[in-house]
Length: 286
Image 1 (tube, rainbow, N blue to C red):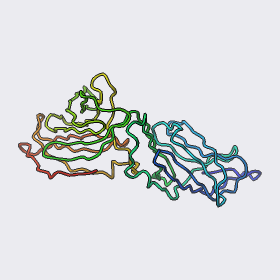
Image 2: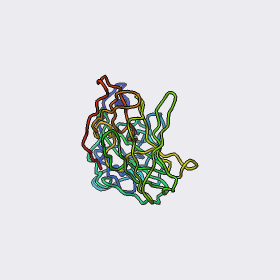
Image 3: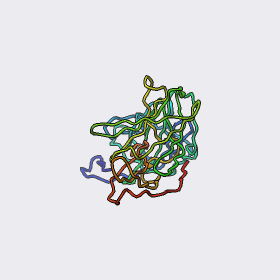
Image 4: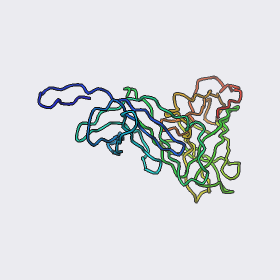
């Protein structure tokens, strides 16, 4: 970040500022910034990629540091938010990540009756700066164990913010183009749910997984995995492909998490003669 040195007419490079982050189990974040030599008012600025901004006051803390708090009660709309420090009327300065204490996010289990799920995970960008990935869902269907069998995907999870009615079901929706929707029966009770996605009826393309916890008249809830400390699951959670003799020819199908950590299935046509079936062992991933 370049700032102008008063009275010189020249530009100098501002020293990078390092921020430590601590996450709490309710979805709040605390930021501590050291190496501050600027008196006067200061703010931690969170700027979403579309330009929306949220300013949090930075106040003195122990060790000559400045601290800002983002409680779970303060809305942070879904998206990726770059973090800056701003002093008085100066130019915002990028923050670099220090120590991120995310232990409280591992195996996080909010109350099932919580009206919404707020998830904020600090992470380093490709440029080495600090950003926060935020989700705000009400209600929320959390993906849990995925088991891959012969030609099918078995999904288990937990519902937050509402219960499961007797007529609850899952939907497998084709993304883009003329959309097809396949229904899957849901088993379970109270908040826990399970269903099976057969690969054979799915045409090549991407299929998104949704839950209808109250049937046709209730909410449409995107199934996602949010309640842990992994900001981007797509490159981390990898699942084996299954070759299937599908209704549309020989295909390979596999589940994956999108860039938003939502659960989807990719189906890809193959050139294997006769649509040979690949026998895969059941794979568990909690």
